Image (cartoon, rainbow, N blue to C red):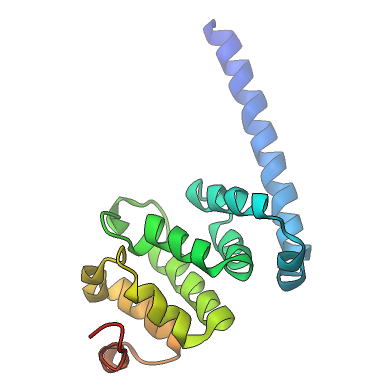
Amino acid sequence: MKADDLSQAFRLAAKEAIESHDVLAELWRQMPVAETAQRCAESDIELLRQLIEYRIFPVNAFELLARIDLRQAYSALLSRYVGKGVSPDGKFGGYYFELSVMLDDLKEIGGEEALRSLIALDDFDRRKLTDPRVVNSFSDALDMEPNEFDAWLNASPSYR
């Protein structure tokens, strides 16, 4: 492809991406997430995971995913945020913000037990529990001060 053709193809793709982004943003604003989750199909799970992976409204996609299937929500968190081998420093954007909102959604949907279950998973990187961003994210979700998190964590039978 010639440079002029590439430039034109780029402009077209960029314009379509922006238009799609705007449409998706408006849909998220209008969507009643809890009701929508009841109408989602199994095939929607992979689509939501891809939205998270490609960082296209990841917080919105995570909430809907968590309402559909908590196991898949755990898997998304492990693969992108708190799993072994995941580097939050290699991630562009708001690691703390996204993780905090996602953990808050997880707690809202599954209670404190959902947070404890996440930490208990084999693929959860327990070393991340020393990262202030992770501690603050869990603390925010639990409505506690970060200095109270260790006590909550140590009270968890799954952590000991």
